[in-house]
Amino acid sequence: MSYTIQEFGTAFTEDYRVFFKNSTGELVSPFHDIPLFHDESKGVYNMVCEIPRWTNAKMEISTKDKMNPIKQDVKKGKVRFVKNSFPYKGYIWNYGAIPQTWEDPNEVDEHTQQKGDGDPIDVVDIGYKTAYRGEVKQVKVLGMLAMIDEGETDWKVIAIDVNDPLAEKLNDIEDVYTHMPGLVEATHDWFRTYKMPGSDNPPNEFAFQGKAKNKEFAVNIIKQTNDQWKALIKDDKSIAKNLPNGCINTTVAESPSKIAADAAVEVVKGLPVSTPPASLPHDVDMMYYLSAEQKMER
Image 1 (tube, one colour):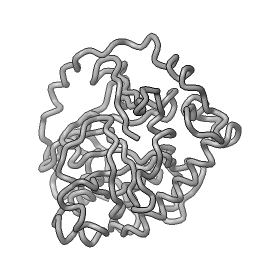
Image 2 (image 1 turned 30 degrees about the vertical axis):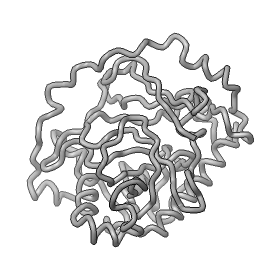
Image 3 (image 1 turned 90 degrees about the vertical axis):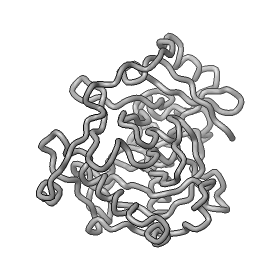
């Protein structure tokens, strides 16, 4: 199955939305209708790219809106951009989510001792090719980091596009250390410090002393979050009550929130037409420098 996107509104403003269509042109949810696996027998997963490499706009699948479009996160009335923390420019990989996963905010994880963040599980594609927003990529899982974000479990899967020239050589996290030296360490450093520039925020915390876990561990966590998603999408009372619109889908047969394809079209009626992106704020390209003392702050 292939997918296309349809944009509405103006990028880098609050009215911007990216909706998804399948190969027959029907609206689908990137959260619920795109399968977890592209090829389960080969361990190839689907990844929905929310944020292309080197960009700063904090885009994400909306878990609360009908059909779960990608939109820009808003904080204190302003759309959010991550700051450049030397030597990094924006996000240093293609960043996105694995569909049909969910980190249950009601369940305490045995590894982190924290509840889930209520989102699909995050994934970074470390391949060389820059993706586009809304691209559905096929990736192989290599490992993961266990970030704790403001008291919530926030798993970060490390993966690579199956079509990348290095993909055949990378089969577990140790291969990343061998063939892409410095990448895992930079990934940990980025996630640990990305909220610090221009703020009083402390570094993010991690389980396992910040060490990356291997492929087997990552696959088990993805299975766990897929099971949590199944409980969410099949439930219309206790679990899904806080996401009454966010569970709407067009393909999950067991879901009480499944709607017909022609009903899904109603979701985008009346939305503003797509226009050229708004100008970026003047400070998006600024570079911030963190001292060794700041980075070591606990």
